[in-house]
Amino acid sequence: MNSFLINECAPLAKLGAEIQEWSFLERFPELAFIAKSNNSLGKQLEQSYLNAVEFSERYVAPQALAIDKKMTEDPHYVPEDLLKKACEYKLFSTMFPAFLGGSGLHPICTFITYEVIATHCVGIANLLGVNGLGICCVLASFDPRGLSVITKEICENEKNGIPTFLSTCVTEPGAGSDAEDADEFANAQLTTTAKKVDGGYILNGTKIFISNGGHAQIHAVMTFDADGAHTPDDQMLLLVRSGSKGLSIPRLENKMGQKACHAAEVHFDNVFVPENMMCRKDESSTSSYSYTGIANVLGVTRAAVGAWSTGVAENAYRTALRYARDNDFLGQPMEQQQWVRLELAQLARRAQVARSTYIGALLAVSTTGLISPLAITQKEPKLPDWLKHNNTVRNLREKVLSGDLTHRAFKFMAQLQTSAERDIATGYGDVAKVSCSELALENCQKAITLMGKGGLRHENGAEKLLRDVRLLQIYEGTNQVNMLDYVKRRVIRQFDTQLSL
Ligand SMILES: Cc1cc2nc3c(=O)[nH]c(=O)nc-3n(C[C@H](O)[C@H](O)[C@H](O)COP(=O)(O)OP(=O)(O)OC[C@H]3O[C@@H](n4cnc5c(N)ncnc54)[C@H](O)[C@@H]3O)c2cc1C
Image (cartoon, rainbow, N blue to C red; front, side, top):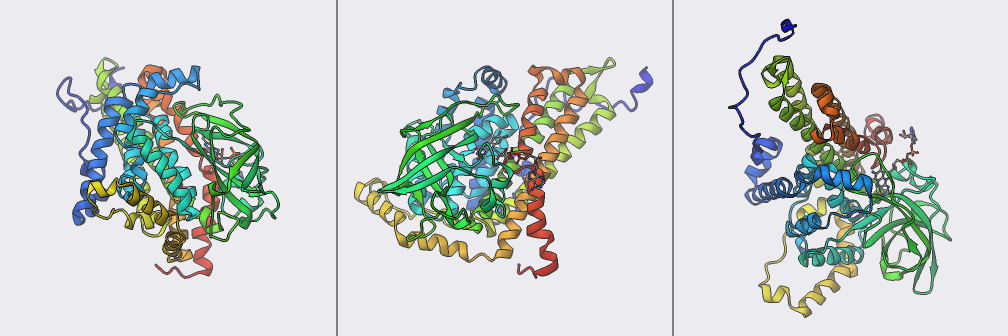
């Protein structure tokens, strides 16, 4: 039987040595060029990384399995202490530019932050980061008034230690993939409607599988105008407050994985939504979106699923590495056997390929996609503190933000992008989502294979990873739907359009 032990190797490290976290440049060599050529961006990236590592090691890793178990038994459980800490680490405001009261960090910082958190628990990364989906939906309507409502609430609450959740309500019992595709959206079987009445809208319908829907303070609800023709021009995005009369949460799903972030059914029964909570495409418009708006959202949010997935791929590698360091196979330490080392190298390789893929998509959307205006409007004008917190100045800032001029500026920046540029960014998002989630799934399977029965024990973490990873291939449009989108954005273009980049 010992002939099985081909090529025994020297130990990987001294007995009992801990697995060390990488430095920023060791983990993200793809970003080294940017970090070194732009000193201030380099500092932002490194600081965000270190912040996320500290938060994850102190508060995510020690509780990930316990929260998974608790929320399997009771999906209503809310990990309050963890959320308070997330406020201290400013994880809710990280997505907003400084001129809106946010952290003022480059959008890339948000993605690497969430890759790090997902390396310890993708359910917790989703719990804290899924606000980004709603923010992108509001951003894509280019309505600064809507953006100002959510920013103010999320950022100010965070300062007071109150976590604020924004749910995004698109999926319905009869509409899933069709509502996750820019081309199919107009034909999607969405039945939630908003009827114009004096001073606002009356909203009716049911949304399902809504992440954080049960404890979100605001719901960004995708709906159609009840009197419209169900075309992209009739789409509306309404911001609905959780205490609104007629809004209820009939149930939370008992789903397979990512337990830390529950998925809820959200029901609207004649809910009145004031006029100023409708995100407008134009001052005069009664709708929120154009086709372009939805495509833009998907470019960013699919790249984000790439980051979440990379965290899972990295987690699977580390879980297998820890196991190999702590366990013997046929009486010899696993990590000293060549077949184990080859498996570990493949696990690390797949995590690295996933990382490069989502970072590539991210660079594309930061250059030509939805978040490109944010990438160049990060800096807040340098005002002394007393002036920044002065009420008149704050009111003035809000007026400017919610005014027509800002709206036009947002739209103008977006319109500078050509359709070819947008397709590149969104198509890259499709690739990141599909490739990273597939690599993550492969890593989870391989980790369990390497660990044998040890991989099936809850306390070793690999079993949770396999339950968590499968969800990444379904949300933000199934991987199949992402690939069909890729055909439309990239493959077809090679036949009838010259790329202009
Ligand atoms: C954990 C989790 C969290 C979620 N959070 C949210 C949220 O916060 N907000 C929200 O609105 N939604 C959310 N969703 C819903 C999610 O967006 C949908 O599940 C997803 O869009 C897929 O839709 P579906 O489940 O209805 O699948 P279906 O559309 O029913 O698809 C079933 C199968 O058919 C295939 N298929 C569908 N159309 C085509 C086609 N044209 N060609 C080929 N194959 C096709 C799909 O690939 C899939 O294999 C969440 C889902 C999960 C699992």
